[in-house]
Image (cartoon, rainbow, N blue to C red; front, side, top):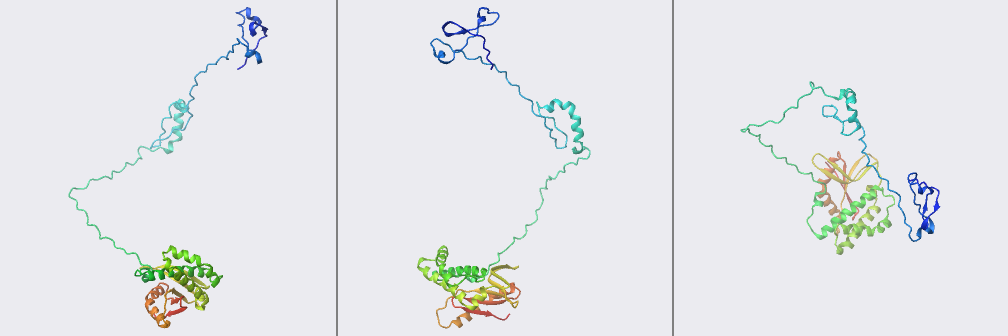
Length: 318
């Protein structure tokens, strides 16, 4: 807002008037607002500047947009109150020419086939086929996976699972960096793993002792280091699947002579004196299991390793 100020003269009571105040037709008197302390004087009136009246804004037309097409490719009518709607009488023919390849000819339209049919009331439905029967193949170690419940045997089973897990770790490391001192440093790890598996506190000392003994015996035994050591081809906890079932082999490897081996670890205990007889009985007991492993691996040689006793039994014959 621009405020024009005319030459001022001193008026009455602090008001300033224009010198042309006597001629009302030439110029109306303008009341000037005093500045500074004079504004605070008694009797002064402050006049607000005139408020400029605003005209209502006119709504701008919608921007021009290319009209969409229907299912046959024909352009639809533009949106109402848009720029294209105003220009549509002149632009329609150009849109029709541009969209000609996209439009479908009425003569070439294929009718939609009617697929809904009503069946006869006396129709006879065909008999249902027989139910399909399928049984999931069982994993290996059937006898170990489902033993009869016994707290003592249950503890031994958990010990075997923990020993198998650490044998897998040692085999992956190819025995490098593993000795009895390192096994002793893992005592707390053994306790936590056995606790997670539900071993009772009263059985914990015995269970951790069995795990420690099994690992130390395998690392100090020549046969154990050969089983867990490096080979041209080696797998730990090797899972294979045949057409009828799947297996999990504790140790599979190919030695330097090219012979394939499948070995199963057994954490069985024997407190008697006749250890050799006990190992022979275990070989006869687990021979069918190793035979299945060997057949799945194209006739690999079979062996049982007992880390708690440093025992070894090879299963020979077909």
